[in-house]
Length: 336
Image (cartoon, rainbow, N blue to C red; front, side, top):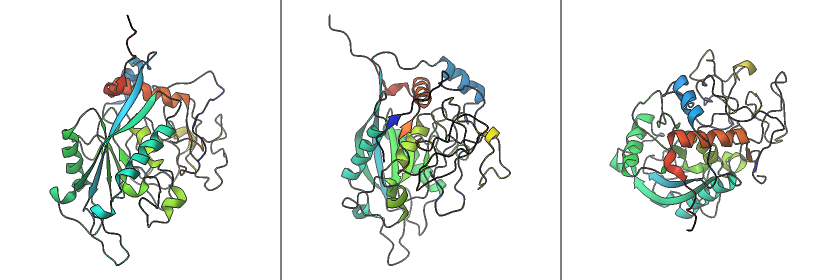
């Protein structure tokens, strides 16, 4: 991973676009490597297009001296998965990610947001057995089993970012205006982020991972950076705002005139993955700019990504002001 930068685009037009909202996010369709694997619904899905646009238009950016400080409570949930073979790693407390690895993930977030007004801290790391909510299964938990866990643990502590780490094949974040991870499938509160614990920073000395794709595609722990971007109001840079033939799972990339992430300084692109070269490409030559290969909200794996744009930073600041103002820390009072 290269040092994180906030990309400066040579244009006079930056900031958020407060127009039409995007439709569903990138789906989890075929192929061994599918780019960023998240099922996060777009911002605007619950509050409505007009409401979200109007609220954001009225939300100011940070004022001088203000910062956004996000305390994170990590919930490591084990005892969800029943091993089915001799080489299958147990899903128990002994094989769960240790506290040191979880704290390393917070350091990754602070590195990714370096140079912005955002910072993150580890408020708590809690280890919970799934036995409180159900029995282990020989397959990953279905969503209907995960929802009660998230709902119950959300209620225990408010005003923090809850990150739920478990053995799962779901990676998703609650959009700011809906505070739900699984909208439109589950309308009950499920605020926070859900991520497979194998996608924490790859550090074999702290926790080896059997999946060979992890050290190859996701060694830096930047999946959570991507999901935090969603949690703070960002869409994929290639977000399709018109339905495909199959809106639930389509491997076809959207057409260029069907793409908008509601940010003006991210070039229009269709989310093609260039790894391992990470070289710039232009999937929408009829629009200005090359594909934002290095953007955290693109489809590229960790080795390619290293930046947010000024427009994305502005959108996140406005989203926090509008929907999560409890993260804003005011300027210190001047001495008399």
